[in-house]
Image 1 (cartoon, rainbow over the protein chains, first blue to last red):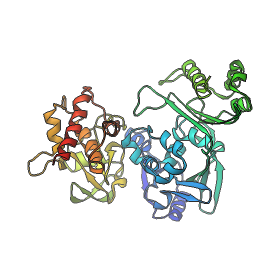
Image 2 (spheres, rainbow over the protein chains, first blue to last red):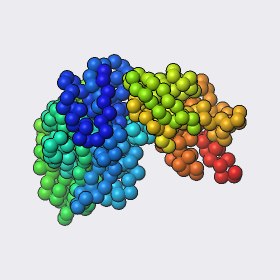
Image 3 (cartoon, each protein chain N blue to C red):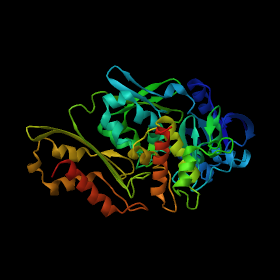
Length: 278
Length: 156
């Protein structure tokens, strides 16, 4: 196993381009380090990122909040800017892992680790976040909804990294918010499922709604069909059989060590009902 | 192998270690600081908690390179001149130690909290200890110990 610690972003990309074979970019390392210890990662190259201060911090730029990919969850939870601009996003992450892991784990790592249960992703999906992807000669922005292609598969190119997360500063403004993470215990839960929602009601009608779920597909996803079905309806006009038939087109819950598919499906339906006050 | 410089319990340390070692391994095997324990090794139990740059962390999840130039504090730093810290005294007074395996982690998570916030609420104490499991399930005396330490701080 070879370890690299580039001194700058430029050196990072130069180093990365030279490495043949499988490699890992190591941010906080809360997943990778355990895999190294357990021998799951043993021959691959490791490139340290976490010392690159240019990818840390939370700041405002024009009408976006920019969160550096290497911002830790501690930094996010304690950010005054986020408290002010995106309190729903910030509060929803209070239960991320444990305080010990919050210190080390990074937002970029949570996204790029590609877990179907990544806590931060459903939130970013309903907030219409974009990812800024960095490579040696190119910067590009992609909506988080287009980042995942399959289980642990992304649109990231071989020598490209997530540099920052961009959230529109008014993404929460005017919306009722909802976030529930279901697990077997309060702290350190890996979610059986998670759901994030924003809705705006006008004249009793659902004028706008955004829903996203984690742990119900091979990667966290928006429920566009369910959203479309709900828009411009009053709560009394919702036919829950129809809602469920739309939902079934969008989620593919599985049975695994944490839960079974029937439970995941039913709780997802129940949580959507709770959010809709039905 | 990497040449590592960092500070442990106020002392500068310079050692050469294998890149794949974790902070936990370096403390226990290279520096003989065996107060820090390994429980699960995957960040779920908190027995390996130390304070790094002012924040409580799982030392089983920190790789050697990540410790470069860091300031690390372990449970061995709590006792000064053979006098236990108020926090340790409070754990003894409350019998907050059953098998003792989680104790160092509990102490370090509590210390990290009290260093930042000397007068935490019960809720804040509970939150700070969320990453630390007690396999004997003796959580009440542990919580009471931290509350007592806070009282001692207030009456100082």
